[in-house]
Image (cartoon, rainbow, N blue to C red; front, side, top):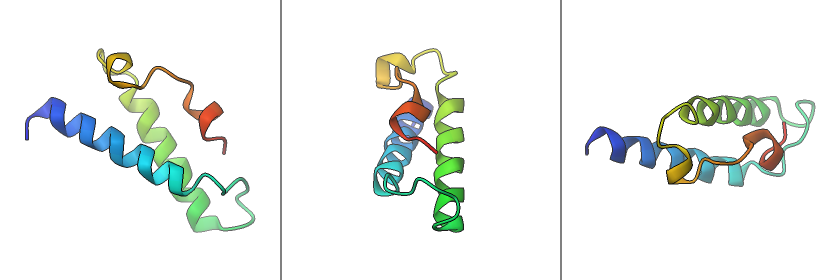
Length: 68
């Protein structure tokens, strides 16, 4: 797998995990799940720095779609 394919795979995996955790809205309900959601969100925000991020579906505000 080349670098671009790896970035795309990582993006898709992170989005999948965030969809699974979408119901977690408070760190008081489940600290581990909240920590996961925070980490995945931060990773996606870093991936948005990639020059081709928008072309690969990262052209949205992550914390609006997956609020912490």
